[in-house]
Length: 409
Image (cartoon, rainbow, N blue to C red; front, top):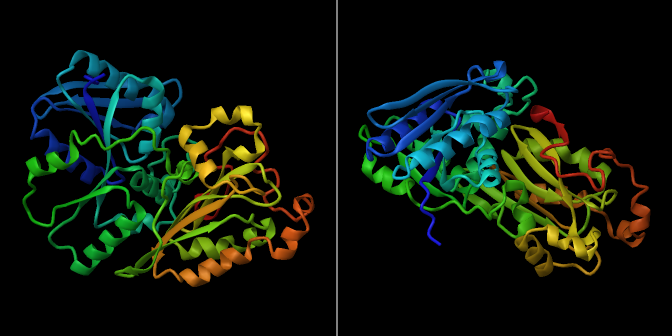
């Protein structure tokens, strides 16, 4: 059946000026296009300001009081209801949702999927060329920039910017004629390695912006695929999490690391500082010998690291419960099933500047169980010293981050 609901294009980005510039450029191309924007300045006090407008008219300018001042409450109590209401009342107008810097697009996708009330067309992340590298390498938390969305919001700037880029199906770089050519090429190389699955658009290299051409590349593209999981679940379902490009270009390179052997918990713990300090961004999943039931998510940026519980491996579940996993998860498990370890595997991706790929690969391999430790058998692995003990309890629900260190803690 044809979906006749208005299409929603989501604009994310950590630079409000760049995101707003793209939003205004799109509005002038279609008088029926409606922009929905939220000001979270007062969210910590439980107040969110909502503006709804077209290119020439403000339709709404209201403040909403939330039960709890946080991003999830904003999505649940105002953003999703507003999109659903506009979809019903203005069926001939597509919608443009401009997110505040602290809101991550994956959270919007999850909330919309649960409501089923809106039709997501694409997720666009807008970055300002002049400040992107500073944000991706920052050790600041959102609180340091006064961008935190709740009293307990401990997210790091580099984490948020990285997630905005990785979830996008389109990345727009807002540049300027004054930017150095070498810096421009370096930034382009970095973005293509951080999000090789996204379409990449560059504007602002000349004083004039072709708004019509920009709209043709961003609106009504249908690029969003709701079946593709978020970054930490991609490899579990067989989707790529990066590219292996040790040589790279413009000093930017990338690597992939795969292994069917588990990590020795103590050796992995001792190598974390070296691994996180080398790479600008790391993502993926792993397993450790002492906790064979838990699929563990890895996310590193800005020298910080978050390890999260992604749920249980299918190999440790009774067959009748496999139906709880997605079709792609089961297909990926079947395609790579190991007679000893089942679907347990490590898949990590790292992106950085002049990464010593050979050295990082050697470090990761040293953290795996040795032949002798493998030969001792799985029953002996539980006695290994485990600094991660208790972080990923068997049977617990997936958590976005249950262990952290460094700038992201």
